[in-house]
Image (cartoon, rainbow, N blue to C red; front, side):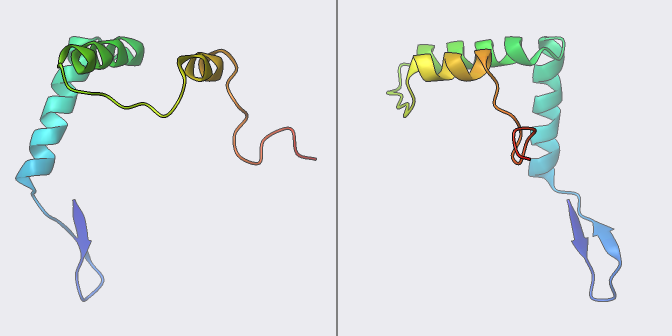
Length: 80
């Protein structure tokens, strides 16, 4: 984490929480060989097996459609 001093110089702050989150993120991504699809499948598996009530505001078909037909970026190629 960085902060700006009154004289304008940037100073690095050693935040133990940020350090811990980054360490866990690195361990998790390495566990799945940096494969985002595998990471997300595992996260969803853990989420559904947690037994907690889940809420989703989108339908499964909409999610599948978004994956199959990605939208152009904002202000994308369709604008002329």
